[in-house]
Length: 81
Image (tube, rainbow, N blue to C red; front, side, top):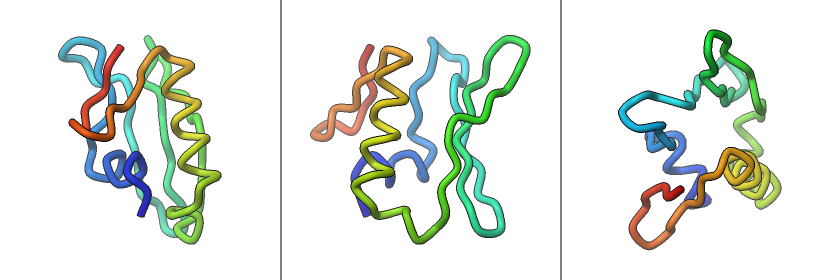
């Protein structure tokens, strides 16, 4: 499984200070990635379990987090702003 995707499923998501900014939910056949705005919760991406290890989903997740100003350090497995 791809590194960023593994970390997302473990709950290692970028935070805004101590506040959760993103969440992941596992549905019956899909994963859902949400951005926790104020006051709304916006769905950013949906992908099925078969796509979990794909380069396409990994790249898309990376693009989404970069849009919000985060970069994932694959060595330390931490999110940086």
